[in-house]
Figure: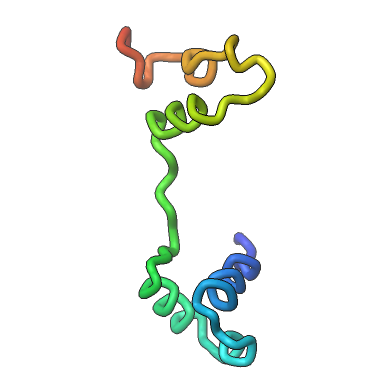
Amino acid sequence: MKAFPWARAMEIGLGHLKLAPRDFWRMTLPELAAAAKGAGFSATTPPMTRREFIALTGKFPDERAASSVSSRDLFPGPIGSSDSQ
């Protein structure tokens, strides 16, 4: 069982929703989830796609060996390659 993400809940409740600590701690989890959803936060964020990841690594390459690493090194195999077998 995963631990409840209290740090994230407090970040959303206290930081983004601007709830007073007293109000935050008096809320039930369904109330907090509804308020967060109403503010545009979702319970789950879909994982980044391979294309998004490659675009991100192209935009923000590692300082070391940036020129020697290709998407082939990161994602070997037939998934997403043009030469799938």
